[in-house]
Length: 137
Image 1 (cartoon, rainbow, N blue to C red):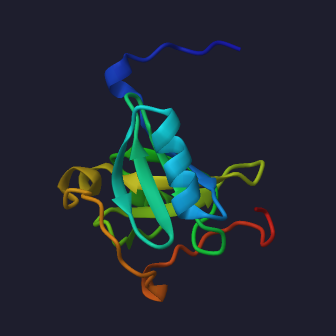
Image 2: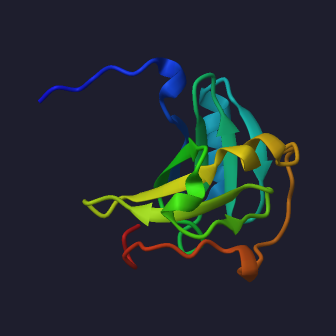
């Protein structure tokens, strides 16, 4: 199979990886004690950690699925974009193997309010609804 090489400027960016936690404060503390990272967002249902090369989202089951998040300039071509509490817009799709992939609108990432550590309760209107199997955690 011939895979043509593209310049790095033409490649999409992996924005974050989201993993499930059953105890957000404990898991957040575990990562912060072991790695050099910064908390860039936190509420009752998820937290985002910034590392040198990627962000790690810690997500609570039934609120957010485990997933890969890609920053793409044309995320709306994958489906209707939903605005989230942090000001970003995205849509979720599943790859052929059923893995959840979040397509983040790159422009919304650039214009989102600074993700200073916030503590807000989960809002059902902004809870992620995605095509992922129940009990997949």
